[in-house]
Structure formats: C-alpha cells, structure tokens
Length: 80
Image (cartoon, rainbow, N blue to C red):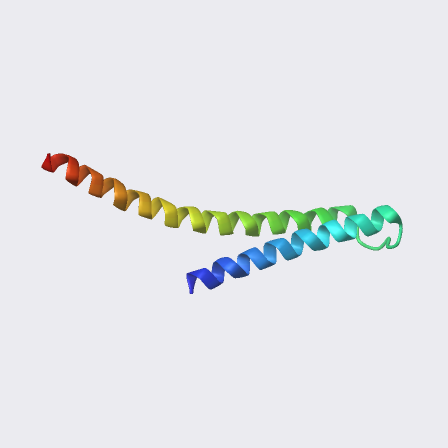
C-alpha cells in the first residue's frame, strides 16, 4: 500500500511538472495565450511539492533501517 502511494505521488509530480513545462513552451512559441504565468508556476510548484513528499516517504524508510542497523551495531559492540 505504501509503495502505491509513493508511485502515485511520483506520477502526480512528474505529470504536473511536465504539463507546466509544456504550457510554458507553448506560450513561449506563441501557440497558446490562455493560462497565466502564475497559474503555470503554481502547477509546477505543486508538482515539486508532491515530489518532495515522495522523497520524504522514501527517506523515512531509510532512516528506520539505519536505526535498526545502528542499534544492532551497538549491541554487538557491547558484546566484545
């Protein structure tokens, strides 16, 4: 379940970022004129926020594993 949430966050993040970049490119070329620059930046920042949540979830897993390894190391050190 947690892996699915992480995957969903990644899909949302890269989707929002790619749409924002695409809209900015289309505005720069002059094909579209409708979305405001601020709206595009908000979509881009929302994608970055979703990506940061995904990274935070992965880092929390690594921190838990590191704590387990560190406690095991302390126990072995006390034995010798």
